[in-house]
Image 1: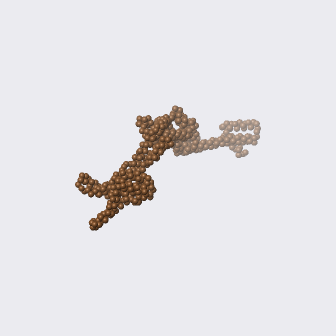
Image 2 (image 1 turned 135 degrees about the vertical axis):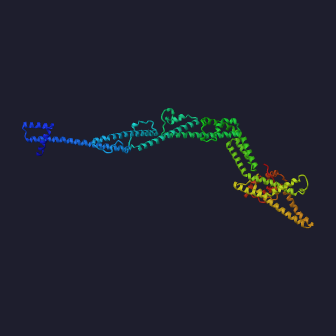
Image 3 (image 1 turned 180 degrees about the horizontal axis):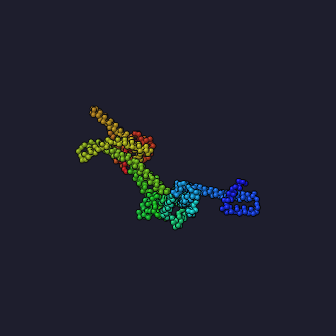
Length: 595
């Protein structure tokens, strides 16, 4: 208590100048008047002092709280400023003080402008982010196919703790990518629509109905923004593929109809003025699907008209098929005759004709078969061409050889007569040709072997194996050369023996002379031994009948060997032995066959 009494007087005297001192003085006067003791007075003063301390404490506490709040506000402001710097990726702000000096309120007042500036920048950046993200979401919605989308940028929520220009640039790049994708999708949609219109124009259908069926927004008259979703692109692609398939199917149909029309026209020699009506169909035969873009070129009406015309021509074709078949038959026979190949049997052709007249065989199949036979005949004739040229040379040289033999036996060949000098020049040329015969025959044999090995069949010349003819010719030529050598040796002996004995040697070669004469007359091939009676008869006829021309030779060959040539073909490698009757018949060949 004593510790309190001393300051009380001091405080009382100090407070006399204040309202509190005046009130304390008034309180003492009251105490004096009432007569309160000192203890009571001290107690009241202590209570008053305690109450004053409490008031001061509250004030101090409040002051501390206010100071702490100011510190907190300052710290928050600095933290917010720093956060905004990081959020906006700003390194510094020119208006921000470098050092915080002065009272707390002065410090708050110094940082407030910079903080307001950063907040304004943040709002502007948020608006930029919101605008970019709003466009991004709108394009995403368009790509997703959402028909309605609220494009108010204020409704777009900006998330994230990064509002930097770098992040904004990323969003802008994303927006640019989406815009490019949108442009590409719009281009695809326009491309599909253009293809649909083109294909529909070619097919003769209404393109607007097809496009509207895919989606109403694709029709320009709808006034809606075009749907560019994946599902719409897929539907457009499917529609285009369907139209392309229809186009291809119709084009293939027109190709078939055009080829049918062309074949029928060619078969019946239809004049050009009648063909002109369907020139638009035949013009498509050589075109592919990608080459056709003319509107109305693949309509159903054109296909129906072409089908009607094909049916009409098919009905006319039956009446002209017989004439056409006969013409094809003649062409085939001509090809075979020119190349000396086997001509188709007349009985077989007559049987086909009967089937055609009875309707038991399809005309188109028959024509295809005939064309195939002609093609095969042409191909075989082409393969025989080189050999046939050599055969013709051999036949010509053989004719000259026969003529030269007759000319050599003529004792008056050197006499002065009209035309003798021409025969002499011909004899010189004939000797040159005859000297080339062995090499020519060897070449023919090699070529014939190669041809037969490649074709797996014999090379027939007017139904006779050429290989056998050449082998037989070589054999008989060798025998003839040996006969000539024997005659020369006998002539030498005759010149050396006495005249009395000369007739003995002359008697024997007289028979050979007759045989040589017959050989020279008939081609020099008739000295082979017959195998059967039929062949012997043929050889006897050949020996007794003069064959001086190639026409006689081939005529006799055909009459005598038609029945036996199949047996000849069955022999291994078609080689004819000297004793074979067929070789004897072949030996009668002495000139070119008639075409």
